[in-house]
Structures are given as C-alpha cells and as structure tokens.
Length: 161
Image 1 (cartoon, rainbow, N blue to C red):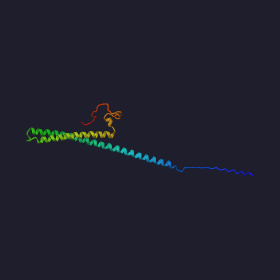
Image 2 (image 1 turned 60 degrees about the vertical axis):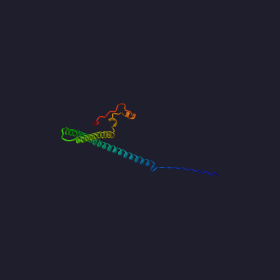
Image 3 (image 1 turned 90 degrees about the horizontal axis):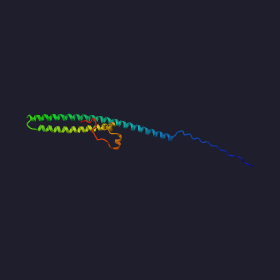
Image 4 (image 1 turned 30 degrees about the horizontal axis):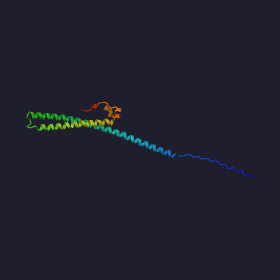
C-alpha cells in the first residue's frame, strides 16, 4: 500500500510600513537645516543694514568734523592776521599774541589735515559697506582679480579738498 499524502504549503508575507522613520528623520533634519540657513541669512541682512547705517553716520560725522576744522583754520588765519596788524600798528608791545596766533593756526591746520584723512577713511568705509569700492575707484572686476590696475592712480571724484 502506497501512502500518497502530499504536503503542500503556501505562505504569504505582507510588510506595510506604517511609519517611515528614516524618511521622517531626514525630513526633520532638512527642515532644521533650512531654518538655520534662513536665520543665518536674516542675521547677514541685519548685519549689512547695521554696517550701512553705521557707515552713513560715520561719514556724516566725519564730514561735519572736517567742515568744523576748515572753519577753525579760517578763523585761525583771520586771528593771526588781526594780531599781526595789532603788532604792526603798535597796539601791543610785543609779539607774544602773534606767536600764540601762529601756534593756534598751526594746530588748526594740523586738525584740518587729520579731519580730511578721517573723512576719506569714512568715505572708504561707506563705499565698502554699500559694495561700491571698485566702481568708485573705477576698477573692473578683471583688474581686481588680476591684482593689477592698468592705469595710474588718481584721487577719486568727490573727495574733499
């Protein structure tokens, strides 16, 4: 007698991911990076705004100091001339006041030169803050990259003299 009892089996496996944790983690990481990038951009924009405002204030203050120094020098010239005339016509017995007026004028001239230098530096800082240093100095990008300007250096337009 032959026993013929075949064994059959069938299987079925179903894997349904209810949550894709790797994708969720990647998404959260990407969102955090995006937020950090947005914050960095906002900080950079705020810093540029602050830098430009500070440069404008510095430029205006330097301009006013220069104008004050010019007026002080002019007043010193007038004072020296007046003291020289007083001494010349005998209104004062010695030249002490003339010498003091000369010292005052020399100090005023020195202050004017320093104020002009400070104004020039403030102007450079302003041009740098607004991103126009090259254009103000008539330098092309190719010259800047090469590190060599093909023409002779000149005083930029608008510099106080």
